[in-house]
Image (cartoon, rainbow, N blue to C red; front, side, top):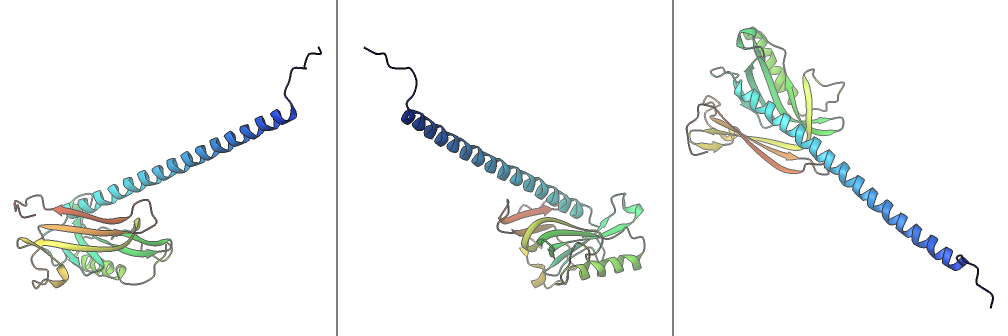
Length: 215
C-alpha cells in the first residue's frame, strides 16, 4: 500500500490562514481598544491636574485678598474681581485678579486675568476697571485678549455665592451693596460637555479666621 505524503492539504492550509487572520484581527481590535482607553485615561488625568492647579490658584487669590478696600472683592454676575497682595508681598504692591468664563478662540473656558503690580490708588482703580472691561460680553481671542489672561479649563458658566451674616447669599441680590465682605466664597462651575471632565463642580473657600459652624 502506498504511503500518504506528509503535509497539509490546500483546504487545511486555507482554514489555518483564515483562523490566523481572525485571531490577528481580534488582537488588533483589542490593542486598539486598549490604546483608546489609555489615551482617555491620560486626558482625564491631565484635566484633573489642570483643574486642581486652577482651584489652588483660586484659593491663593482669596487667601491674599486685601480687606477693608472699596475694591476688595466684587461679583457682577460674569466676573469675580479681587484685590490681593502681590506674590512678592504687600510692601511690593497690590494686584487685581479676575475670574470668569470667557469665549476664547477654541471655545468658552474658565479663565483668570491679573493686572500688573500697582502701587498707587490711581493705578489700583484703573486695574479694577480694566478687570471689569475684561469681563464684558465681548469676543476675545488669543491675539486680542488682554495681557495677563490664562484659559484654564473648558467651562460653560460660573456662579459665585457669598457666606455673610450667617447664610449663603447671591451677591447680586444682596442689599448691603458689597459693604459686608464675605466670610466664605462658593464657586459653582459648569464644565463644558464633550470634555474629559464634565458636570457641575462646587468649591468653597473659607476665611482662615472664620469660626462660624453654619457652613
